[in-house]
Image (cartoon, rainbow, N blue to C red; front, side, top):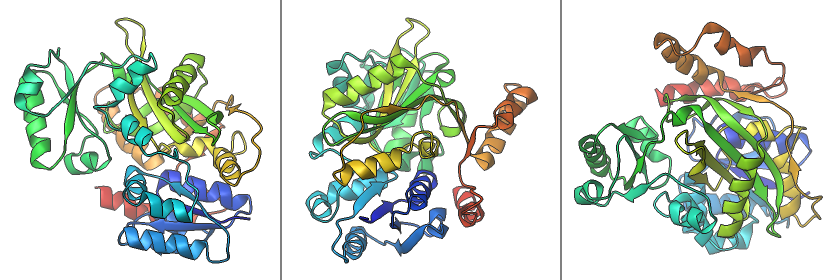
Length: 378
């Protein structure tokens, strides 16, 4: 079988490694940092700690050494960035779950360009202004409360401690923009949908080489960290036809293929679902789609290896993905605010259909190694 190379070995990358490894597919891993706990998975036949793009390309050449063209899976934005920088060289070596043209990737993941792409698909978005200057923010016609977000990438959250910075006034938005600019980040300012953190829905999908969706899962954030504007600590799958249709329409109109994660929020003022983000990679909770209920990684692997697809598979099972260490931290904060009764905290843990973020009985070492990752985040 053709080798799979997973570049990025945190939660989603580890889930891909395990899913393919359990199928008997030879899997190799590439990490940028030692704390990427997926490096410890027993399902990896080779591990590479890459210092730069050249090291990533060399690892791909090694994977192809027996004469088989590898399939390259990407976990995070920084991993996608390597492919964008070295587009032609990567595609000479491997097949990747991304479009043949990099332009749809850039249009969808840049938050200043997403509203235009969404409008072409007839998908609403919150009112958004590119924060090029203080004047652009003040003269943009924005109505507080607001959110200041990075143009793209995940480094913003690591540097500022928040995925998005809320602002009650234009003055606060300008201050947040200035703080981000001083740290080297380009930003947008977006109108904040009321209670949006309670109504965040997601589509995670794989769109095949022929342009048709082959696997999809829909669900919603249950708890997230940092509070209100963070990544999932608990995520529950629950199919919703409207979320599925709007997300697929946006991706189809943009000419996108490969893995994609579309986030939408329900606006209580008009009842509309509005697109707030598109990731051209799996989400942190991607493990919910890797098991026997859907097997999205294997579906993508088979498609990229040239096998005939069987048509779209949509997850109907109601599963809960739980990142225990993060959820304990998030839930404690919510409990102090009297926002989380004990019964609500326990509800998802008592559900038998759980997917754990890091632990697996047949592959326990990454869960132990993930403690080092948590220390690095603190």
